[in-house]
Length: 298
Ligand code: GLN
Image (cartoon, rainbow, N blue to C red; front, top):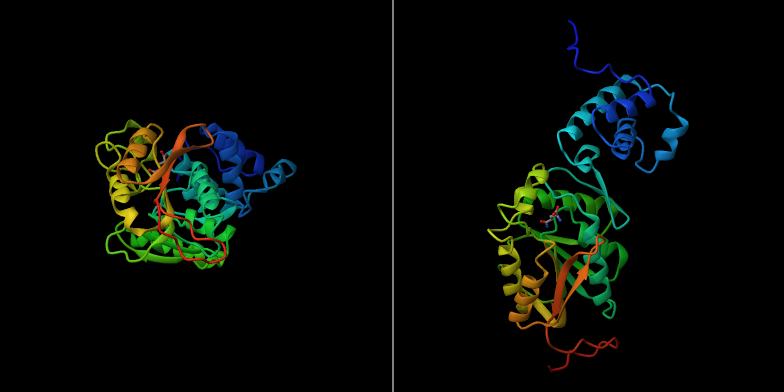
């Protein structure tokens, strides 16, 4: 049988593999990462590629690469193709059951670590954990924290629990719809919920990711409204609610936090300088380091 003429010949060497991927329209970095993936090598081995230009690509690697390039050209996130995404220095296994963790979300992790800094053994809850990225980053950084993570999707929880097992991190997972039926209070509640408006044209570029992890009603704020309504009853005195949101949603989220009776309403910027997270704390004293009981107050 004759191969269709519009298909490029199978790439026989590393250099040909890179050239094939770039000829299909991929940028240099994606091409390099897919060649490494096809060879079963770490994404950290890009320097290796330079020294091994003329190395042969085994037939299996050629087939894997050709398929991977096809998927990437069709817009699938690189992380789904390689099955891995680095977040906060952790190697997370991801697939189409979960949103690909974004570097911008590391802003939320940094902020949570800051507000939990004064509370040894603090409790924290990650709502809509997806791959487990936020919860696992917190637990990996602070072994003393009691980290809980929740998702509505059993499929997402399976991914998150797999990551926790692989990384040896004792995050406690549960299935649920935001704080419905939740008992107990947390020193911080954090979330990167779905926040894109249903008619947002940017969604076209995100077609491979789970829609339930991306969109939330006409203005994108439905889930954020629910979380802000429910969270105050589940925060310890002085406890913080920290939320990621869309690039233009900080004023709306701040207003919702204020209206819910929370204090110290503020936002944090992402790597692109956009107000990407907003949060506030429940009135009341922070328990002292000496283990004193929470005091009444403000
Ligand atoms: N930050 C993601 C994006 O806009 C969306 C993540 C989310 O909805 N939580 O690509």
